[in-house]
Image (cartoon, rainbow, N blue to C red; front, side, top):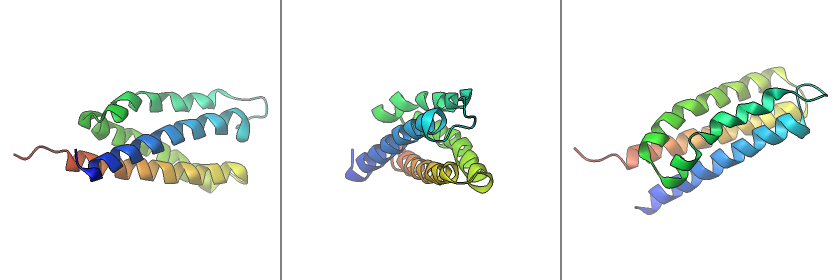
Length: 116
């Protein structure tokens, strides 16, 4: 495996784990939607589905996870636009992490493609 592919795998792994932790922290105690809490923290669960495939470097997981992450990008854009204060800042971080993950997964899939 080339150095570039290893760096892309590390970047995808880091950004996916960071995004999962951000979603949990954001909706549980940093800036929950309701003061009494909400079930919105469950949005982190779909991020666990590709985690082991990303960590193991499975190309197919990188391909479908690149589409899954677009939902988090969209949520980040909407909440950056509509929320205020800390919630808007956390949404901006969500955008950055989802773009980093998307970029790493796309280039990982491209560079691990078998020559035909």
